[in-house]
Structure formats: C-alpha cells, structure tokens
Amino acid sequence: MRLNEIPISLQEIKNPPKELYFEGDSSLLKRELISIVGTRRPSQYTKEMTLLISKRFASMGYAVVSGGAMGVDALAHKGAFPNTLCVLANSLDIIYPKVNQKLIEDMRRDSLLLSEYPPTTKATRYSFVHRNRIVVGLGEALIIMEADLNSGSLRSFEYAKQMGKEVYVLSHRVGESLGTQMLLNSGLAKPIVDIDEFLSNFGSLKEEFDDLSFFDKPRSLDEALKVYGEKIYEFELDGVIDIKDFKVFKR
Image (cartoon, rainbow, N blue to C red):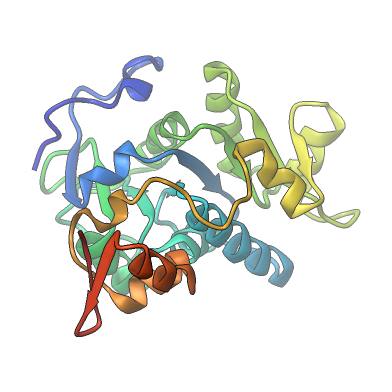
C-alpha cells in the first residue's frame, strides 16, 4: 500500500521520496524515531551494545529505524522489536538479504516495512546508498554503532550532516571501527560512553511513558512485556489496558 502522505521529516530533505509503500503498522511513524546503522560484520561488543541501546530506546517509547541489512541493522531491529521501522533498498515484494527473511517477515507482520520502490524493483548498489537518506531522515538523530573507513555508514553520516542532525557513535578500542574513530577525532560526532547519560539526551529515563499507541491494535502479552516489562501489570491495575487470554487490549 502507498502512504497517504510522505512524513514531514522526509518532505524537508534533499531529493525527498515521491511516494512510499508500506506493509505493517504505519502508526509507528507517529512515534519518536531514532536511526541506528553500522557495519554488516560487527564485533561482539557492538552486537551487545546495539541490542541494548535499541531495546532501551523502545522501552522509552521510541521506534528504531534501520535498513534491514545484516549485522548492526538486523540487531537494531531485533532489539527494538516490534517498535521498529525497516527501510528497504528494494520493493516490498522482494526479500533481501535472504538471511534476514524471518526478521523481515516478522516486521512485515508486527512492525513496519517501508520502500520508495514499486513492486518487482530489485536492489542495486545505488539504491542501498539512496535508501539511507530515508533511514536518516526519519530519525531524530543518527547513531553509528561501528564502521570502517570505507563503510556505507559514513554515507549515512553525510546525509545526517546535510540534514543538521546530531550524530552519535559508540566508543571503541584503539584500532577498531576506524570510520567512527575518524568522526570522533574530527569533532563530527559525539561519543556514547555512559548509556544512561546518552539516553538522557532523548527525554527522561522514567520507567513508563504516556504514549500507549502501541496498544492501538491487540498485542500478545509477550510483545507487551518486551516493550514495557513488568510495568504492563501496573497498566492493567490502573485500568488503561486489559489482559485476556495472553492478549493485551487498550481500554
């Protein structure tokens, strides 16, 4: 399906998409959004931190935007699931990369897939780069978890710079992630050193938040627990949701 209207954040970028196709929960576009990208071959440290940071953003009510690629992209989607948006470099009827087939199908069902390409359009080297302007454009800020000097993630940085968005990078040991180290050394990005301090830039770290649009459609109890944790039972006691047969409904 086509979106009825291009999000305002994308209307203002250079070369905005003429149209966007979607499958899944388009209400996620109404959330606060954060963009997370990085290498297809992350270190174990980067894997753990990507899952942690994306999960923490989801618990704060944000939805995480990434590009569905192997590595950091997939981990960002998994950590935030189902509060995540995936922008594809091909049309929605094509699954690529195949290794992420289950993840992409899960997002098609419970999250949101976006593409500017009409049916039967295959990904190209150009479309992967071009896709990144949408990933970056949707987010309040850009986080690059890990990147080499020749990484495509540095093109995402260029988009963020053009759009005037803040860029954050994960701290790494000397000799690792040379692309993000270069951004730090040049004063072009801010380091993520303390997770709580970093997240405080994006609102309070209170345990609950007021936006309950997640429950605009019935959710499984497992999905709700992933996003809200044990707080979900307090919401039930407060009368804002019902839990019946392991399904959660908004009152």
